[in-house]
Length: 251
Image 1: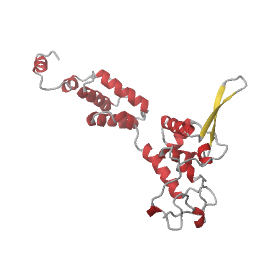
Image 2: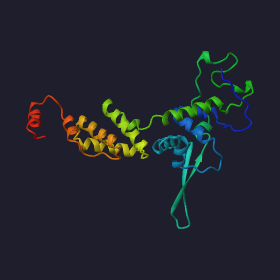
Image 3: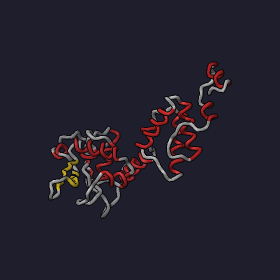
Image 4: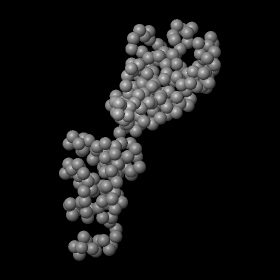
């Protein structure tokens, strides 16, 4: 059962054929619904959408590309008097040419989901006095929760390939940078990880020691180990030649 509110203001109207367009990912459908909440004369840009949604500009560009391919968004560059491009005009469409023509796949309902007085091919919401293209408050809350979920997992793309130990130490490095009011961007973290592995010559223990050194000293960057004991602790144990060299004071 869906409980709908009576809306007189602050609601958005979207055709159900658009929100059930199987060519679009669920994320793109929610993003389109979010765009349609703005006034008709609103000027969109990637930076502004990133600030409002908490999504990265890279994610915004991916969703816009998906919606452009499906015919829901078009972009037109504008020129100034000198003939130089200075901005981009966005046009957001509630439905694409495909859904306007009724060519999109109709939503599928199982028999248990369809009341006896409703057709499974084309649900007749008007029998309950509700317009077919009204988005309920529940759907708006669901969209907000999806955006918050993505926002709550920063740097996942950069940290996911790392081993659990290396990932944990970089997570502490991220917290330290935030604490000293020098937060990392996704690109900065990616470069920091590469630098750590280069300095350590791909030795995981040395990578860990290098990052821990910066955490302990509250350094913004990553550098070669300054502490001799840290260098020794990063040397793998069990190698008799390394042990002998350490005993002779060669390392």
